[in-house]
Length: 111
Image (cartoon, rainbow, N blue to C red; front, side):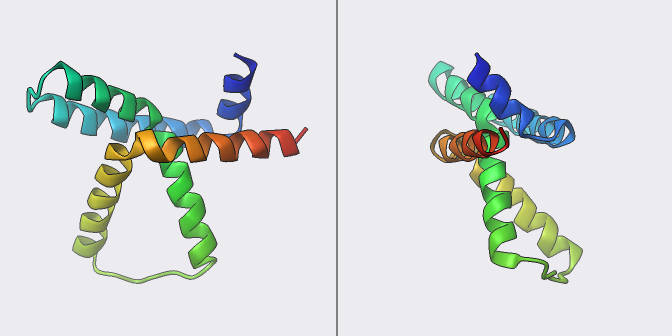
């Protein structure tokens, strides 16, 4: 339980709230498709892990982009964000452990 507290302390509460709201929206969209109990359980687990997969992406994008900024048309940005959120959501089971490990290492280095 102490491990979970340390990991969650490393994330800004506003980031978690935003990520869980996005995850809830995606979860309910998938749930409305009535795919059955197996896919529903999987999407619920993905919804719980989504913020940690988003942390991996944000850290990676920050590392690659640095302080550079791309100027793109709004429709392109919205389509990209939608695709990014859905992919991070669907693969959260595989990506999120990297994010949890990253946060655990960061928490340990702050001690």
